[in-house]
Image (cartoon, rainbow, N blue to C red; front, side, top):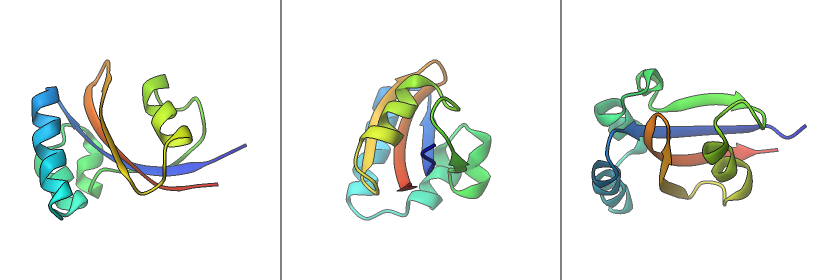
Length: 92
């Protein structure tokens, strides 16, 4: 079964996610921005969600982690929790 490791920044609005993505595109540190802005408890670890398999996250999140390119920052991705910026660190 495939496994992946990802990190994310979760915020309430699409606008906020887009603003943070712009900072990231200018070279800002993902972990620092996760600690500053994310509403997920994973923010303490710089947004790191650790390793997980397909089906352990909501579908929209899984679709990014298991189908999109690794190390690129994807999003904003809307889920029932809010808007995510997602970076897959590795996938096996």
